Image 1: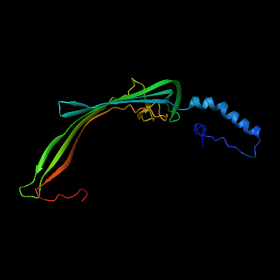
Image 2: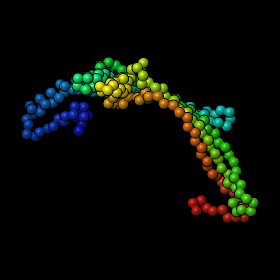
Image 3: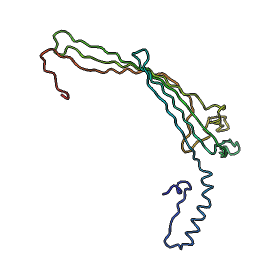
Image 4: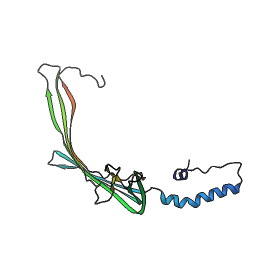
Length: 209
């Protein structure tokens, strides 16, 4: 199936029993309506700009800040209306240039702590040098689902007054940025064991055994 088939939901079949004039008329009708198909298609363009870097601070710490910006362009958007008589929601397509954006920022702070774990005196394995890598990170993205930016619509769903915020770009391709806020801290501790030290004269095991 071709891209044209996907857009229209119909396939342009070739029947060997039809003459060329019938096929030409079918193709002419299809391409005559093609501009209207493209006009009504829920398509758009999306841009994504990620920025990240790593820097040393206070000599022993590594700071990893990052920023991500996403923006989508659409030739139209949706408008929802609840119809009480039908207990249904009407969806209208508003043809106008629309831009939807979302952005987020994050930062992680990490360092390395080196140490040696010593076993009791006289043991074949005397010590293991180890490294501890603690990491603390924070991420934030603003809530863009409010009425001020207009990416979402507060929609009544039934007569009981149940409401829900619905994206004005629901079902568009590419999908619109989520725009729902989030923030939070996270901590991670990684412990890596390195270089065991054996008593002098003891044959050390080969790697993989």
